[in-house]
Amino acid sequence: MRVPMESKTFGKVLIANRGEIAVRVIRACQEQGIATVAVYSELDREALHVRLADEAFALGGQTAAESYLNTEAILNAIEASGAEAVHPGYGFFSENADFARAITERGVTFIGPPPGAIEVMGDKISARAAADKVGVAGVPGNTEFLTDPSEVVAFGEQHGWPVAIKAAYGGGGRGMKVVRAPEEAAELLESAQREATSYFGRGECYLERYLTKPRHVEVQVLCDRHGNGVYVGLRDCSAQRRHQKLIEEAPAPGLPPEIVKGMGEAAVKVALGCGYTNAGTVEFLYEDGNFYYLEMNTRLQVEHPVTEMVSGLDLVALQLAVAAGHPLPFTQADIPTNGHAIEVRINAEDPTGGAFRPSPGPITKLRTASGYGVRWDGGYESGDEISQYYDNLVGKLICWGADRPTAIARTLRALREMQIEGVATTIPADIAILEHPDFQAVEHSTKWVEEVLDLSGLGAEAPAAAPAAEGEEAEPKVRRDVDVEVNGRRFKVSMWVNESDLGGGGGGRSAKGRKPSRRTSGRSTVSGSGSGDVAVPMQGTVVKVLVEVGQEIEAGETVIVLEAMKMENNVMAEKSGTVKEIRVTPGQSVSGGDIVAVIA
Image (cartoon, rainbow, N blue to C red; front, side, top):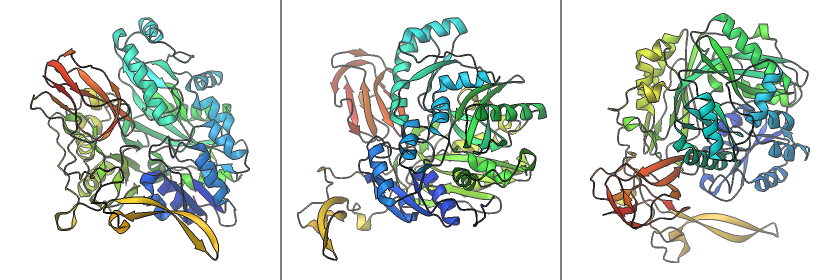
């Protein structure tokens, strides 16, 4: 759906996000003649979304907390740019009521639901109460924030193990941990709270019963300011690892018509019941002919393109129109469903042996697939770099077919056509999933990838190293603040220049005095030599050291917890013995292959 040009939306929109979703929103705005404003961290100053936007503003910092979660910096960018509206994308501030309120109080439109609806649905506990109020039942769970591991133990003993600890102010599997026994409660609660704080800026968590073999089915809803609400079909997102989606499809296959209708109508009830407007997603778990309300994501969903492919509706354009006050231009009966679409999230992860280890680094080559029914939503091009500080999604491959078998076949062809070098990706695992008889027969569940699919023999191809002129490493750039005069007015500006241009004998080293490392392989594997050297398999930040010098340790015990790309990873000892040396502390950044401890 294209908003008619005579239907005014906005003159200028700031996109408070990065990566492929920022690119997606920028393109939708530009198609409607809307000027776009990008924001960027120091690491993203040359990113694709910055290159495509009409103007861009620096937020400073490197980590998400220093940049894309820096409210003051984003508000300053809104004021400086004169943006009339802000699109939050997903993640970061997209489900933060305080951020939405701070924007609207300045007379700027938040392209999303009102702050009150975000508060109700952004807090998963109050969201459960809101669903109960309109007669939509959820998975058994608690209604208070967790404060102590003993609460996890008590819940598990009452409802049975395993149980799920979930972030109250987020989604996408971030901050979710499955506790299978009482002795795991303390460690996993702490880990869930750390991940939730890192990704959403809030660490509160709650509990739910963990179903044994559910499908994850979600409903795309749209509500305007005039009391109208519709659902735009159902999506199946059951192919997951670490509770994060790998493959999504629309419509959700194999569901009885009465379930489709019942789930869709329940989703609209939940949305209208909390005064929701704009695009949102209501998620359900489906098992043994029953569906349970899970949560509502008060934002545009990562997998929205599959809904667009089968409905013909541009959801971002509709977001803009609804935010500008226009009524929905159709009713429930007008929404078509044509064919079948599959979306594959291509992440910078090494799926070797089913480990899915983060694989940050430079993309030396990126050639996307094309052809009839093929769409690519990406946030990177050749030469760009996947940073350890942000989500590892390279892009999304979306393929349409007249029916599900055709869509699967087209997706497999397109995946084999994709060429990504410099980082390992999930493509080998994606192909294994799509080729498997269980997936093709819709016999998979949210736990199928990790519990049934055999990826033990899977290996990612070693990505090609970045090219360097005459065998030399690419020269790093450093920041310099300088004063300039324009028409007699003095300005202080920041410039990024080659160190050799400074005349200070930089010697090819970075601003911190370290020679930058060049990634030669995307394989994220720990050395199996048994030498006692504990090496990290990827670039990241140490969040916890679990051993001390002189401690006796067994092979397989966790030595440190490493955060990379917003995920926590346990780095384990491969040799039994005594801890002779610890070389890192919490908060320290490390590179792939660095020795963090020595066991004698």
